[in-house]
Length: 47
Image 1: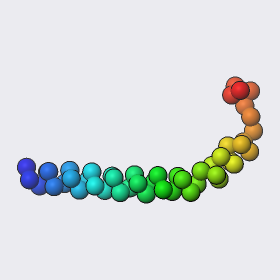
Image 2: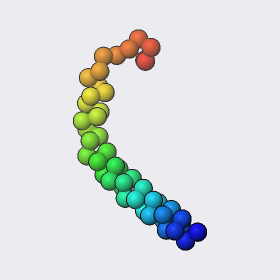
Image 3: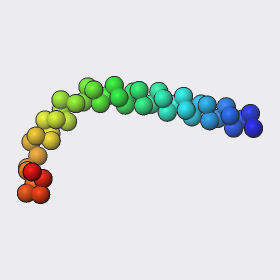
């Protein structure tokens, strides 16, 4: 039981750190992502 609680706690902590890292990376990548989407050819279905 205690081992499971510790494992769950470590998993939650790791997910939190990973999520924060991904959010930081997304902020830095946002201008490039917007530029890529603007340069994509427009589909007739997406107006």
